Length: 293
Image (cartoon, helix red, strand yellow):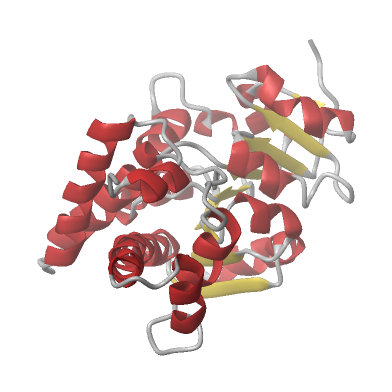
């Protein structure tokens, strides 16, 4: 099948987060989407996007977003035996929104540079709901030249765009953020439950914390929105993904000779949660059921 040449956008990987990011782009851009699960692209196609296999996307699009499960997937897609990097035209810009790893970026960036292809790592934080609403945060690593090329597209996703340094630092910043978020999640769960053990209603504990010095994303958002009222509502983020991010963060720290004992403890807790609830369990479930009554 032949596809029209597009100087606009390709988007490879339109699962939950990828489709949320792409939804910010589909209205005002000529968008070509690709995913191993073609049905994942149905909503975007219904809004005007065109489905296109990944290799064709590489051939015909000069700006290509990636949103894949992890850094190994990005490396394989771009530089594997059937890698699509060989199809990129010189001057193409790759924008990787995957929660990746700086070590992988150090392999990808020089390989793409030899082909005349620019790369920025631009992972997103804030969750699927905020990504779709345009209120999430993008942390971007890349050269000044590459960032300048990407900036307007990134600003179409969210106004909160931070260029944190050279290639790899965006992914590093995302791992720093996710490490702290996971640590806060377990700490908040433990503290709120302690308040309940003292005879204080959960919602009261959370309300007071949120007016005090220990407030955090889990107390300000997760508890009141997803864990209030005696039942839980799914957050849309699995324990397996949480473990993946923790492991990447601890692995990054080890490669730098930086100790993360709390991070390793939380990684162990997350593995325990997976043993109890399964890898596909939502974060909200483990928080609701961690303490057996």
